[in-house]
Image (cartoon, rainbow, N blue to C red; front, side, top):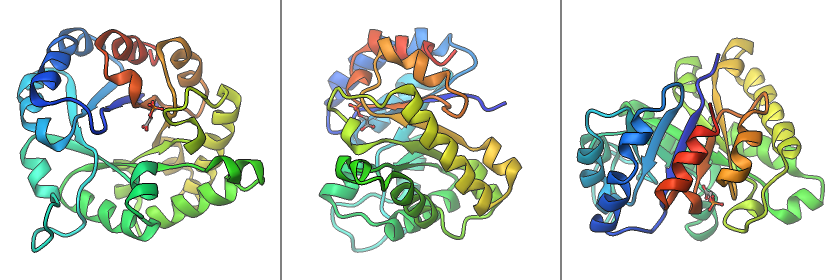
Length: 251
Ligand code: PGA
């Protein structure tokens, strides 16, 4: 049985003061929810404060990105050990906004995933097609290329420590959610790709989140599809009540 995992991707939102107000308004209720792994991914600047606020609760911490190298002359970048030190156990990699605005490739995401795993972090690797690609019937091809490229060379142990997030780009921040059936179809396909990368047992064990305009009103139906194991939540994770209700949708 895969344990669902719901992560809040706060993106470039929340000062430290705002972040503390949000986390303090939801940590008790989130921590009382058993049966779902909950991860908060604030911006780098708020990781330390949020990490301290959730210490001793069941809620976990994740970063939104990291650099692939361990250290060095990379002005403005942050390494795996630095976020690990602040209490992160997860790191989002290859988010479509990173792919689109920062030109991240599958090859780079793969390098980052290896560095994250080597540092004891669990990567949340994002994949998903553009609207034009879906309309051209290329969804499976695009997603397969991203999964194979981003996870290239990872052995079963590393794959089991990895979380995948299927996020159709046309559904992110647009209010347009994939239907549960559309999402389920791609999730089942990703599991087939995982099977060919490893074996059936690994494919059945890796958690695959759905992301893209998840809200309290649609979370439950999405999360209860057979191959959907929770979600990666952007906009709706910025408000305590809506995030708590989304997490509960995974029960
Ligand atoms: P959204 O973002 O929930 O605001 O659509 C999801 C994401 O980008 O992870």
